[in-house]
Every structure is written in C-alpha cells, then in structure tokens.
Length: 247
Ligand code: SF4
Ligand code: SF4
Image 1 (cartoon, rainbow, N blue to C red):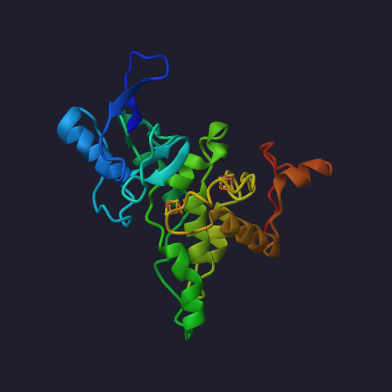
Image 2: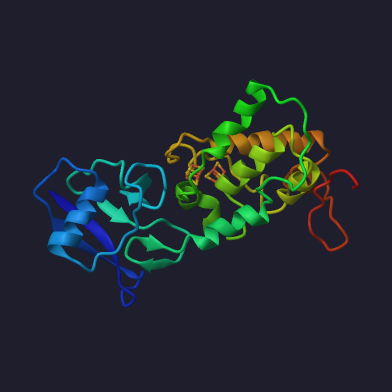
C-alpha cells in the first residue's frame, strides 16, 4: 500500500513536497500508518496525536482533500495526506491552530460571568448539549471556503459556540453575543455546508449559523448585502449599517 504525504519543504514553490511511503499492512488507521512510518521508515515525519480515540481532535488533517481525524480514518492505497488549511504549517502535518482558536474570543463564544437561574428543564439542557461537544479539531475551519477570501471570518466553530450560549436560557449577554457576530460573521457564511460532513462529532455549524441569522432578524438586524441592494444603508464611516436595536 502506498501513502503520499505532503511534507514541509520551504524551498518548494507551495512550501510542501509530496513523499511516497510503502506500507505492508493495509488494514490500519491513518494514525497507525503514520506511527509505522515514523518508527520504521522515516523518523523525521511530524504530526500531532494524543488520545487515539477520536476525542481530543489533535490529529485532524486532510485525506484526498477532505478533513478527517487520523485516529478514526482507515487508510486506503494511494491516499494523499495533507495538513489542515488556513493555518500556518509548523512542520509536515502540524499546523498552528492558535490562530483559529482566537475566533472563539472574537465571537464572544463563551458563557457570561453572571447567569440567570431559571428552572432549566432537561429539554432545555439538551438544546445546548450538542454544540458543547465540539472538540475544537478545526476541521470545519479548514473546510470553510470563506477563508480563501476573508481571513477575518469568525468561522464555523466559533459561530456554533456563540449559538450554544445565545440559545441557553441562563445566558445574560445574548444581545452582546448577537451584536458581535454581525460583522465577519453570520452574514458572511455562504451556507455552502462544507463544514457539516467533516465534523467528527456530528455538529452542523451551518444550521447554527442559520439559527443565529433568525435570532438576529428577530432582534432587528438584517443581512447588509440586502440593505445595500435596496438603496444602501451605510453608517457615517461608509461601512454597511447592520441595523439592530439601539442598546
Ligand atoms: S456553511 Fe458557512 S461556515 Fe460552513 S463551510 Fe460553508 S461558508 Fe463556512
Ligand atoms: S464543530 Fe466539529 S469540526 Fe468544527 S471544530 Fe468543533 S468538532 Fe471540529
């Protein structure tokens, strides 16, 4: 079985060079194959892994252009392995995911310091449970085509986590969180769905973005491209006016 791995190579035009490795065992996960290469064929191959059971998200990479967790993907003859996109490659299959994680802070994708204390039903608890399962593997971030044109886009997992708190009946800063995702956020998503099938825990960021759009509409915001099309709603600084309530 042959595996093609895009190796770090600063001298190459695109910063990477494809290297082929021959393996005997075809029945193994990608992580097992990479460990075999590193321990038996080429000790310089670099990649990240930790839990080896699909929980930590640290071994996310791309196979034939699709994001996977190496510890859960079964390798096939001829597979091409590459690092995640939209992040700086540190070496081989290791990327600097810190740049992606900053979007959680920018999207205010965290709980408020003070919370309301209503009686929370099991159904209401379940509503937020799903988004809380995000393992921050950044597969959705890598798959999102918006980053090809806008590096400031808040992105799928930060918006999903924003919705997790916006939809929590105990949250006290919903207005702030909704206001934060109007620019480089929910209206910049093309609803292409690329982020959904790559999520290893089954989260659907696109659907959460649609929910955030709906909530924004109820709160008085609107798609700025629509406001531009009907004659231009611009603020004093010339940027689109997103509407919204006067807080
Ligand atoms: S649906 Fe939106 S967030 Fe998801 S990949 Fe497409 S543009 Fe990005
Ligand atoms: S939403 Fe899914 S794909 Fe995106 S970072 Fe979280 S676990 Fe990974």
